[in-house]
Image 1 (tube, rainbow, N blue to C red):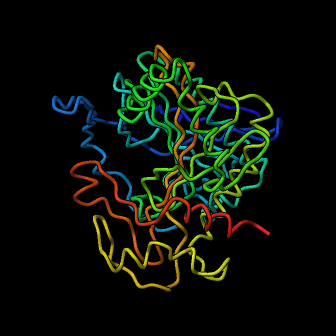
Image 2: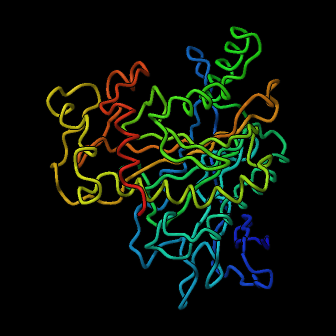
Length: 379
């Protein structure tokens, strides 16, 4: 991997990650950009004990531009974008419309490919490995910034998720605090250790899923992907390395080498979940027909069964340990991948129970979701 750091016209950092060591990245950003003006503020919720980010400047961010105005494509034919080069492998740059700024953290954009019409699942294994290298490098760089407590690498895919740019990309948030979700995991981790005389919760969850087997989706020599026993989302997969590590920086070479192929296969299966031509339609509709009959909290009724499906919308999220956590070594790096689509033409909305009380109601049994994800394996 070759890493080249440069600056955009308004002073934001941009980093190229290249597979070839002889790549030259000397293109300049010639846009007349004004200085970035942000108004990010973190407010504490006194009742729930968590934090809310207020970022009013994001109302002006780019929203679903036409393909020929995409800011994440390379700069070509006289059209200047966020990436000055005419081509690239992987690029990371500071978000022009960040949720977190200054002492409140940092937000970065990760462009996986210059191909606007591709997706992460279309990458080759070397390119996917390069993205993993970029995530790892940014985790290390952001960890050294004053005030950063936790680094979150993630991808939102699909307009249903809320993506405003169609180009395949992800984001990295550097939070100045441990996120509420992580705090809950750390609490459960401590309680499990106390209750079991020192056992590790993450180790036990992984061991139990591998022993049970019904919810296993993919299993390699160094990683296992499974649908969790109490999955919140219709199709949700957790991917764990077999050797527990707190973050991406601590992955060994063997786990890093196996990850790209396994992750790409997992993403490709997600794209085939709702394709009735692959593995039959029964699995795709497990729970969906029941949800249509019963309704239930969060049931979406805005589509027709059997209609042509756009690519599966998903969120892919790396969970890494906070840097100052007392039991940081007990935390387990893992990736959580899930879709809000519950069956063909229907989304899982977070309605009263989920949004109002944080009690999820899942229409798809985790065992059925795992079975469907095994049915759509690559041949």
